[in-house]
Every structure is written in C-alpha cells, then in structure tokens.
Length: 435
Image 1: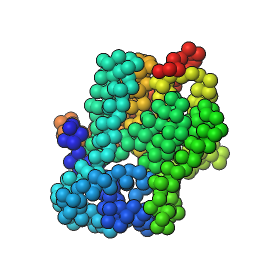
Image 2: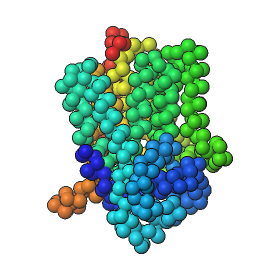
Image 3: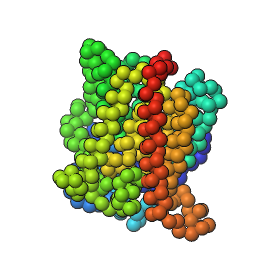
Image 4: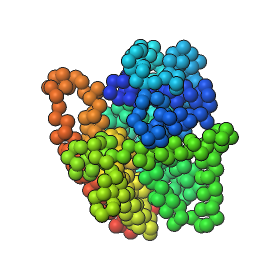
C-alpha cells in the first residue's frame, strides 16, 4: 500500500526519466506486437546510430519485463484507452517537452502506476521470501526485522515505487535460482537464472557462479538437461521475435546498448571509479588506456573475473548453507559494482535482499546491510534531488561532490565487510549443509 501510494509520482528527476520509454514500449508491444519493440533502436539508440540521442523512442532492456508490463498495460488500456494512446512510440521526448509533456503526465498517472506495478510486486515477493527464509533459521523476530528493513528501506522504495526500476523482478528470479542451486535442483536453477538474465542485464554478474556451481555439483546428464532447458527458456522468451524475423536485430539492439552503450567509468554509480576520478566518473571514458593497452573497462572486468574465480574456489568443497550462498552472491556483486564500468545509481539495490537473506546464517551481516542501505539511498538521492527538494529548500544547496565521494568510500568499506564475512563463512568445514 505504501508503494502504491508513492507510485503515481513523476519518478526520476520529476519527469519520470526513462520510464517514459518504458510506457512507450508498453504501447508498442500491445499495439504492434512484442517483436516490434526493438526495431526503432537502429535510428534512435546512440549505441547503434552512432550519434547523440535525438529524443526518439528506443529500449535496451531484455524482453521479460516487456511481457510483464504488457499485462498491466493491457488492463490500463481497457479502463483508460484515451490516456493509453498518449504514449505512442512514434512520439519524440524533446518535442513533447517543448509542448504538452506535463499535460500528458497529468492525464495518465494510472499508466505510470501500471508501468511500476511489476516492480512493486517484485518487492512484495522479496519481502515474503525474506521472512519465509530467515524466520525458520534465525527466529521469527529476526525474520520480521529483516523483512521490515527491506519493506521500508527508503532506497528500495525509491527504486521501485518512485523511479519504476524493475531490479526487484530480476532479483526475485536470482533468489529463486540460488535457492534451487543449493537444494540440488540444477535444472530449475538454470531456468530461473535464464529468466533473470532476460529481465535485466545486471544478472549476467552471476553467470560464472551459477554455471560453475552447476558443473561442480551435477552429473553430465543433468548438466545437459539443465542446459537444454535454459536454451528452451531463451527460445520461448524470444519466440515472437523468431517467428516474425526480428530476432537478430533485436538481439543486436539489446547487446549493443548494454555493452558500450554508455562508455564512462561510472554513470553516477558511487564506486571505485567514481572515487578515483574525484567525482567525475560520468565524464571520463572507460576506453582510455590506463595500464599499457588495458582500459578501465578491461581492468574492471579482470577484477570481477578474478572475484568470480575466487568465490567459486572458496565454494568448491565447502558444504555451505543456503545463507552462505546468498552471502557469496552478495560479495560477488559488490565486487562487480565496485570495479566494473558503465554502472548506474540504483544497480547496488540487489545487495539489500542478498544481505537480508544472508543474515539467516550470520547476524554480523546486519552491518553491511545497514551500510549498503545508506549508500544506496545516498547514491540515488544525490543525483535525483526530486525526493529531497524539501531538504534543499530548508538548508540550501547540498555539497553533492563531497557527499558522493564519501559514499563511494563507504561502498569500498562495504566491499571489505562482505568479503571478510564470506571468507570467514567459507573457512569453516562444519557449515550446516542442510539449512
């Protein structure tokens, strides 16, 4: 109910940010078909056009979220067909901003809620999952505290109910995948992970972890079955594109937008690169050679790949409980968020539910949970001042650069805490494998 109360808000920057293109994608998928969602990218997406964005519609999210939003979009269209038509994909954002953008916003608040609803439901799933997982292992009081700390986490609420980002949707698939992996359901784990990856590209962080654990823990016939089911899931998700002949251009659009679409060391993610660039991460290309021919993008990926190998090595013989596996995933993603380039403010949201689940096995994880909740909130509000306008009006302009550097430093502390807790958890040979 809290999230639904917030959902009609105007989102990032007070003008919905990229939620505009999400509503246009909903309109396009419902009126023209899913297979047409990515076809305008060749002209409008800077990653494919090679020029500056001119305000035309394009989308760079994989299709699972498009399917989910089309459900809520169809419901909205049934009740408000005229307002639905206000967000045709042929419309240009800059042209609307010069004419009637705010009138369109005012006449279609329900459409904005419809676009955010999958994210809100993803939050609800994670709240239930946190309590259901933590309570039997650490007590109902701890379970309620963890679920409540996530439910009323300001950064999480801004991410889903205010911005409309769908991080909670792909994280829900990830949480299920890791749970099934620990239970030995390799095939189901890989299917759930495939859905996570086809919801948002940050799920690719866990590719080597999910693949490596499956290969280590399952016989060849089950690996083959799991791989087959994963490929079948991929084919099913892209079936409309395959049937209508737009598969290749759609895949190209998604991949080109994700990798190198915003080639800066940090797109306002307060991490190692933001700190070393002294708050100018969004102005520094990640393609400048830093160490011989190695660029920031190369160095970040090498650091992340080393972290993936280390996590798998620590898990190779350790009979970890499920909570430790969630802690491993949290430490791995923190490494990804810290060292890779092109990341955004909200991408650390995944760490909040992963830390919450890991609390079931170690109460010390409350420390990184609290710290990352603070840095997520700081990261999102420092660059979207709309939620804090009241504070700016009360105290005057905020020292954005200084606060952002402090937050980046705190994220490095969080990386150290998660890494140390994971290392200690996997140092014990007596972990409770049955949890």
